[in-house]
Length: 404
Image 1 (cartoon, rainbow, N blue to C red):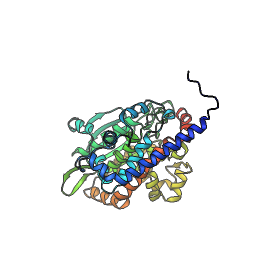
Image 2 (cartoon, one colour):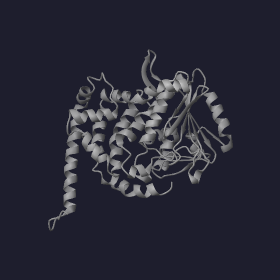
Image 3 (spheres, rainbow, N blue to C red):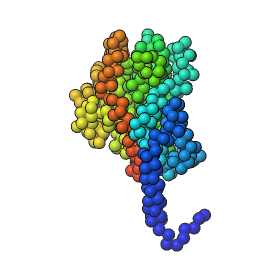
Image 4 (spheres, helix red, strand yellow):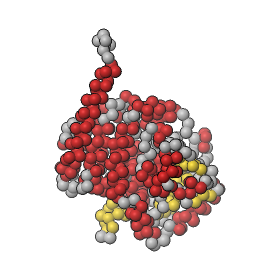
């Protein structure tokens, strides 16, 4: 057992440690901001290679020791509960903010995140042949030219974790890569959870138990989710396959049964048509949990108006699907027993020849890539700081064991 020296002021030592951390992080920030293009060019051979964010931070750790945490440091950190970590992901956030802010490196990195994943390319031949892929969190099935993505984690009401992000990105890639698929549909599966037995649930938001246990990573979940599959739904898959467009994109429909909490509501903001059962509700409880609700702060003001956005994000307001303020997010509200028929009608409406070109132009006008890049650059650091905030650490255990 270690014996502390008499009179040792632990509070003063902690304050000094924080001061040193702040000074080092200020130096890292200045270094990356001054040399982001040079650093990125060196890691990507002059932007001739596409490295995803996880690959980029690992490469930077080798090429520039001390700039970002090493693999060994991150492995030790990843094994700890969130409350016991020292916050090395904050240094990854500093690095990625600097790279994303850079006018040449930033767009190239976001392009890297829009490319098909290796897992999807491996599964593609089988999906084209059978039309079915079963994954832990998502079931993908092609029917009559529509890719049906069903969220099927009934053990946690489709709460989001790293596995769900990986499965969703794989399913989105396959949807966009399969030439026989014309559009995608996302819906929650039927639950076995006692509270929702036999009912479909869209998404219960971030998995707070995983956050408490330290299993919600900055790069592989919080940033991959926003710059990976959600951007692919909105912007398309980067394939460089045609002279007229670098992106392969298709229309998307979302169907909400029961509720869309947190990340579930965030997802709805990028879909072309959103249906909801009349007894469903939407919410973004991130401020209550102490974190930032992804890109919702960027999108929701434009979609629902600044007052509603503040009420939902800052005040925790829950929107019923059938109330007027929800209609800026939900296109169509129907009785629960009519959802299947309404989905069929919505899919038929999005099956026109000009839909893809028009959705592409609408998305370009509504959310220019440069504006998204500026937001996600700052989000990379601010979310890293939030997940290590004392208030989040103090709250998350209580949220994790309680019901939504």
